[in-house]
Each structure stands twice: as C-alpha cells, then as structure tokens.
Image (cartoon, rainbow, N blue to C red):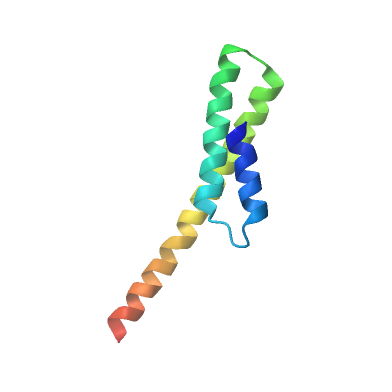
Length: 81
C-alpha cells in the first residue's frame, strides 16, 4: 500500500514525473498487495489489484514505446551533423 501511495504522491508533487518511476512503483505495490491477498483472500481487492497492475503495465509499455522513437530521432540527428 505504501508503494501505491508513494507513486500517487510522486505524481502529485513532481511537475514532470518520470512514468517509469510512477508506473513501476504502482506495479510493485500491486504485486505486493496481490501476494498478501493470496494469503488473506478478499476477492474484490484481488480484482482491484489486478486492474491496478494491468494499468501500470500499460503505462510502462506506453512510456517505453514513446521513448524508443525519441531515441531513434536523437540518434538520427547526431548522424546528420
């Protein structure tokens, strides 16, 4: 739970939050809570953590894909000079 709260606080406090830090921390929090929920089962919370993890994975993939073209463009500009 602390990871998820920390990620939310990080997003709120930072003007330009790093999506890898934000979504990575959310994914870690969801994974840890899922482990806890497998021991102390609460179906509603388990489903919620599944969605929370899926959204975090989506955010990480989106950030990774957005970063790749930018890296290629920067490399291409360096070669032209």
